[in-house]
Image (cartoon, rainbow, N blue to C red; front, side):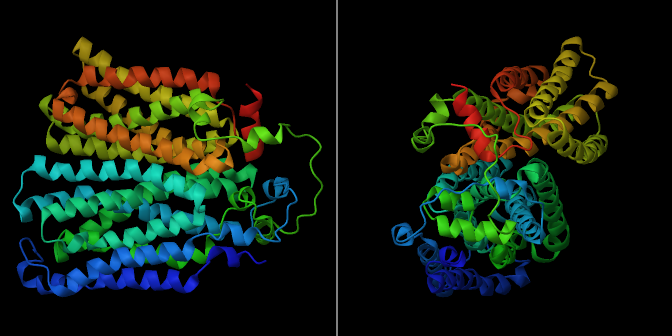
Length: 531
C-alpha cells in the first residue's frame, strides 16, 4: 500500500473543503474594496448577504476538509503487516533531497505561524483609531489571542496524536485561511472572536511542526535542525510581519495585514506534497506498510540489521504509557520544569520586556534612545541563536537549555541589583537588556524542540503542545500582572521571574537527559529505565 493512500483518505472532500474556505474568505473582499474611498474603514458597516454566506461556507468547508483527512484506521489495519519496524536505518541515514524539501516546507509553516500573531502589534494602533476605543480595550485583543494560542497548543497537540501530524498541520493552515476575514470585520467584537480562532490555529501549528521534524530527521541532524527551524522561522516571521506592515498598511490600512492569512495559508496547503505523515506515528497506529513506504522514500531500503547495542524495555511498558504519566511517571519532574520555564519565559517576554521601554523612559531615557537600545539589543540576539544551534548540536542539548535558562535569570538579577543600589546607569541597562534578549531568545528556541524529542511517540504531539501552551499562558499571566502594576517596579518584577527560573534550571539539571544524536526510542527508554 502506498503512503499517499493514507495521506488523503477522501481527497475530493478535502480539496472541496479547501475551495469552500477560500471562497468564504474571498466573499468578504468586495465590501473591503467598496470601502476604499473611506481609507478602507469598515467600522459600523452592515454585513451584506455575500459576506454572511461566506462566513457560513468557512466552518462547513473546515468540517469537510477535516472529514477528508480523517484516518480510516480500522480499514487500513486490515491485512496490514504486524512486524516490528527498527528506525535505526532512518536515524543513521544522511540528509537527502527529500529531507531538505521537508525542512523547507516546515520552515514555511513556522514562518506563516509566527507572522500571523506578530501582526497584532501592527494592527492595534489602526484598530484604536477606526473603532474609537482606548488602548486598554484594544489590549484585550492580545489577551484573547494569547488565550487562543495557549488552548490551541494543547488541542492541536492532542489532535496530532489522534489524527496524525500532517493532518493537524493542514487543518491548522486551513483555519489560518478562514480567520483572514478578520480584515473585513465591521466591529471590534467580531475581531475579538476571529482573533481567538486565529490564536487556536496559530498555537497548534508550531509544536506540531517540531514534532513532525523530530520524527522525520536523522538523529545526528535532528537537534540543530529543530533549533534552527525555531530560530530562523521566528526571526523571518517577525521580519515579514513588519515588512508587510510597512508596505501594505499605508496603502490598504491595517485590515490588509489580516487578509494576508489567505495567501500565506494557501502556501502551506500548496507545500503539503512535501509534508509526509510521520512513520513513527503510522507504526504506533499499527499501519506498518504505510510507515515502511514513508521510510523507504526518505531513507532508502530498510534492509540493515538491527544494531547490537540498544537500550531494552519491556514492550508492555511502552504500550501502557498514558498522558497522565507525563505528570506522575518518569516524565513528571522534567515536564513540570519545562512548563515552569515556559511560563516564566512568557511573563518575561510579554510582561517585563513589554514594560521595559516605559520604565526606561520614566528613568530619564529618551524615546529615541530607548528604541535604539532595544533595536541594537535585538540585533545581538540573532548571532545568539547561531550560538544556541552550535551548542545544542555540539555540546549538549540539556546543558545548553539549562545554561540559557540560568543566563536569563542572571540578566534579570542585574536589573535587581541595579535597582536595589539605585545604580541603573546606561552601561548596566545595556548589558542587562542585551543579555536578557539573547538568553530569552535562546530559551524559547530550545524549549519546544527539546520537548518534541523527549516524549514517547503516542504523546509527543500533546507533550510539545503542552510546553508551547505554557509559554503562551505565561504571556497571559504577564499581561494580567502588567494591568496590576507589577512591572512598574523593575527590581521586584525581575525578582519574581528570576527565582522560578533558577528553580527550573536546578530541576532540569537533575532530571533532564542529553538528546544529542540519540534515537527518539532510546531517549524514551532512558526515561523509563531510570525509574
